[in-house]
Image 1 (spheres, rainbow, N blue to C red):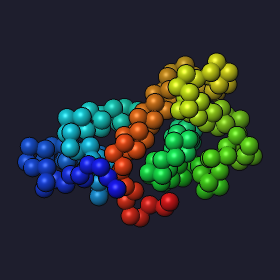
Image 2: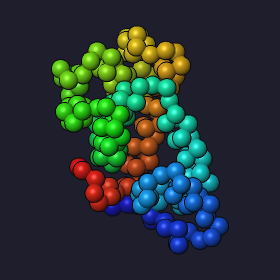
Image 3: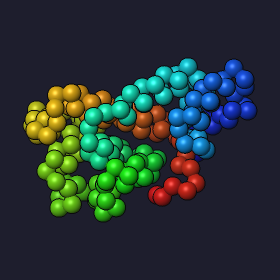
Amino acid sequence: MARVRYLSREAAGADQSAVFDRLERERKVPTANIFLALANAPEILDGFLTYANAVRASTINPALRELAILTVGHVTDCEYEIAHHHSHAIKAGVSEEQYAAVPDFETSALFSAEEKAIMAFAKDSTLNVNVSDAVWIEAARYLSERQMVELSINVAWYNSGVRIMGSMGIDLEDGYRK
């Protein structure tokens, strides 16, 4: 159960209409619980959306990016993140079988060496913060320097998201597969 209110447009008041307009323009309707919770701090939510959009504009192959995000979700046991990225992953080209195998990616034959390197980076960064040289070097075999920066930022961003969701007890909305 959420530890903060999910703030509706009506409950927020007219002074927050701009951030709700932005949510409706840029995100799914109905608005996800994470954003309704963050609406309690509207200035931060506005910056959160700007940063999220920049992070999502990565040049990394979308399937690799989603595998990294799903790895963060599984390593942190964040059901919300995993469920919300199911459709994104499938749309990006991750198969249902791969989606189900993310927790065991290291021993799964469903992932290429490149996919495993990116997922290992996400796991190492999530668990240890300081990515080992070996993990960095392996991921860098497949990504440009720019993309390694983008991967680092994406993994850090989704780590911050799962921690926000976990600390506030954000509930998974109805209709998402668990």
